[in-house]
Length: 129
Image (cartoon, rainbow, N blue to C red; front, side, top):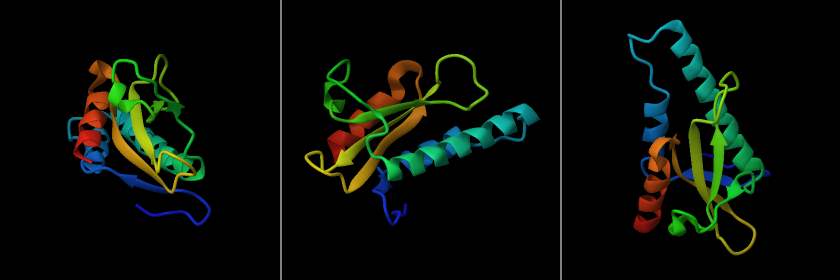
């Protein structure tokens, strides 16, 4: 993924693009409402990409909590504008380098909030880096 002229380069860990594709995939059985939701979700993820380019500190800093390996990473809770209730999705990323002005915003995982799956994927990707 590209770097903006004034911002930080946003890159994705291996597998993140596939997660986004799965999250935003439509099937032939989907009703028109689902299609609109998928379009809104695609737009929201694109907005997050631009937000991270413009401000690598946009996400909430994660602490030691349930996933101590993710301490120092950032998380953005998100959903489509029409959704009522808690945001159903998470973006977890890490700024690189972690000590000083970041040159890169590395997306580790994008996915559903349910079951902390996105957090576990981000942990696995940090271990393999």
